[in-house]
Image (cartoon, rainbow over all chains, first blue to last red; front, side, top):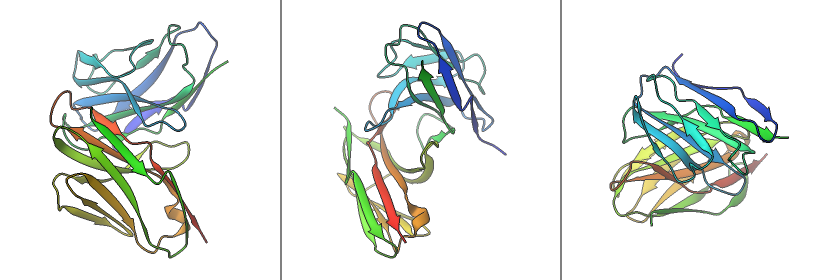
Length: 112
Length: 111
């Protein structure tokens, strides 16, 4: 089955630690995105990548980092510089820059 | 500034009671408007893409329409399994191809 796989589903992190969220897609999509979802707010864009080895900051990139070494993979690192990291993180991909995006099932990150 | 506003924030319907959800948008130029369904704790599920005013798309009990300033998601004779949050997003012709999301409408259909 083609799709987007995010792992893990739940993640707990101690304050001061970096943590990496995985996102893999087998849809052969060029573009990939990371969003953050908080209660009462719309999805906010963290980073996006339209081709391998290239990515751009979204609206709330501070405290996050990404890489795009392979077309299929777009991992997100939440660093200790992110002041309020507890949230639901969603990865998405689209076949090209324009058109509908498809989402993974999300990773819920909790800082303890 | 590009913006998407969804209303109402929450909606409760009796099973079989048809209604509409609204998505108003302000963009410099519309590349596409997208509707998603999101269940609690899950990622959004793609429903429809609309590209130009006057366009309509249907899927089962759902029908999406588009004007130059807003989109409606009409739900005909809803069932309890239609309960979810419905998200609207736009992609503008200018800039970075990013998707701008509304905050969603939480729909609850009572049996």
